[in-house]
Length: 78
Image 1 (cartoon, rainbow, N blue to C red):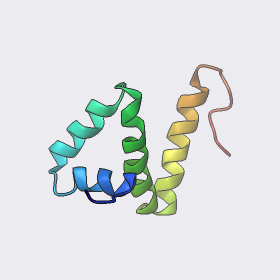
Image 2 (cartoon, rainbow, N blue to C red):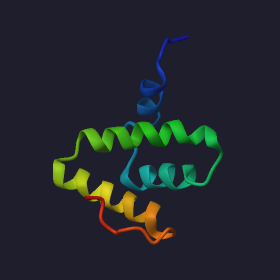
Image 3 (cartoon, rainbow, N blue to C red):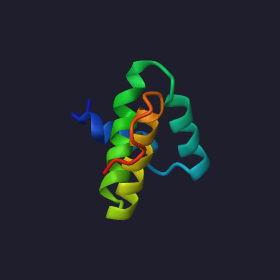
Image 4 (cartoon, rainbow, N blue to C red):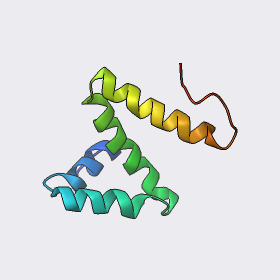
């Protein structure tokens, strides 16, 4: 058996998938068993590392707004 780390195993699982197949992997992992969370984390890490600062800022803004929507906190992460 290969000694693959978790990141490598996840990348191999999704490598060469079409856009529609990647969407399905993501959507089927959301609200799924907690065992899917590391995979989503690896995919997010790949997205983050390959995004420029404006895209990263937008992701943080979306996350911040989502997390603070229910509390009525300031709708800006800055």
